[in-house]
Each structure stands twice: as C-alpha cells, then as structure tokens.
Image 1 (cartoon, one colour):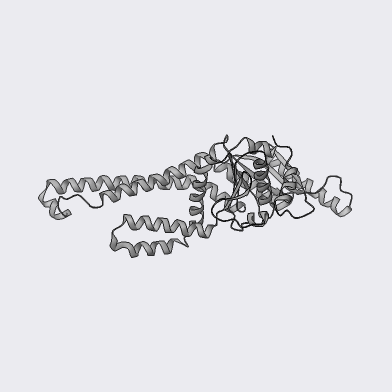
Image 2 (tube, helix red, strand yellow):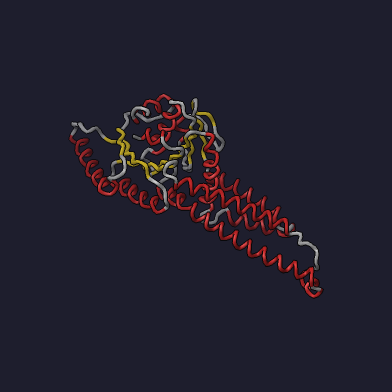
Length: 331
C-alpha cells in the first residue's frame, strides 16, 4: 500500500510526532523505490538530521549518492537562513542607493532572528527542490516534528499572498513615479520640485525589484500548486500506537486539510505482535488496540499500514533494506 502510493506520486512528505520513526520509514520507502529502478531524492528538513546516522555517512546541503538511484541531502535551517539572508542582502545592495548599504546590513542583522525567518528560508529552499523534482521520479521529504511541519505546509499560501501584495504596491508606486517624471518633463515648476526632466536612475532598479518579486511569487505559487496536486503529491503521517502520537496525528491531519495538503496514508510504526503471550506485552498490545480504535474513529477513511517493532536499531544500508522489506512487495 505504501509503495503503491510512492509509485503513483512524484512527491511524498513524511511527518509526525518526534521519535516515531519518520526518518527510518521515509528512507526505507525511498531506498525501496530506488532499488526497483526509480531515480529518487531523499530530503531531510528536520534540524536533528538523522539521515546521516541512518545511512552511516556524512550528508550535507548538496545531493550525495547514497545508493544506486538514490540521492540524499539535508536542509539545515541555520545554514539555509544564512544563505537566504546573504542572497537577499546582495540583491538589496544592488537595488538600493549606495548610501543605504549600512541600513541594508542593519536590516539583515535584525531579520536573522525574526519570527518565522527559518520557516520562510526553509520553505524557499523546499520550493527550489520541488522545482528540480523533474530530475527525479520521486522526491521524498523527511520532515521535522508535527508542529513545525504543519506551519511549513501553511506558509506557501501566506507567502504567495504576501508577495502578491508587495507586487501590487510596487506597481502603484511605479505608476505614481511615472506621473511625477512626466510632470517633470512638461512643467518648469515640476522640474524644480522633482529634480528636472531627466530619467530617474531608479527606473531600471524598479524593474529589477519587480522581477525579483515576481520570481518569488512564481516559486511560492508553484510550491502551493504542487502541494495541492493530489495526483502528484501526498503526505504520509507516521505515528506510534500511543496516546500522544495518535492525538497529534489527528490534529496534524486537520491542519494539513486546512492547508490543502492531501494525506495519502497513515503508517503506524513499532507495533507489538498480535499473538504476544507475555502478560506485560499482551497488556501493552491491548492498550495499542484501544489507541488504534481512537485513530480509526477519526481517520478511519485513510489507508493505514502497520509496521512491527524491530528487534534491532536500523543503521546502514543492509539494515535499512531489511526494514524496507516490511513495507511489502514493490508494485
């Protein structure tokens, strides 16, 4: 079921409460699809960055080959913010008058710790990855814990609307400046008031600002459309058969629905065997069933896939392939 979902989509997001095994499940899915011949990119947006530990190798912000057909990269929020601010600062210095360079630097320094800066920078990087998804058959995102991811999924709509507002304000400003320039050409009093009839040196600058804003708008709009395209994108909620993960998964699903993101499946990880005989473990299994009933009552319409509790930690390609076999036969 999970592999069928992966085979029918171009983009899969895996999310859920911290500690439930999102990284293992998402990596196993990516590896299994790569082993069957697809070109797969596995992307971590979780600041904890467990991909490197899972594959037992160093993974950074640029794609590295993890296995034949499988590339991986880690989007670090801190370095993403630094790169984002560096790019924005350089653009502002090109667009603003030279004497305002110090103000640009001050603004960039204050923006570094502004609320939402990490999410905005990370979102733009995710949008870039999605734009490049055509180079792969499947892009798998291993996301941060639920709350962070829910906010991230809601941002494309907000950022698109915000950028559209900036573009409209720039257009109004451009029209007003054009009127002033025309007045300056045609009226001697206006010439004195507005600096004469010469072309404004900022005219090219305004065009560049509009191009930058339109590029950002197209990027966020493209990401929003990709997230809302149920034929292309799906979100997989990973959880454990425990009270808090179940409640958090129900809430995450509601937040994703409000953001227009389709939930394609639930993966309940670390399930105890149904035929367990030990009294303690049997009682624990009975409690799991109660929580699964709670889950089904709210999200029973979603496909659900249960994975057994592994006897050993999953680390390295061989262990990950053994775990991937639990996902069932490849479609």
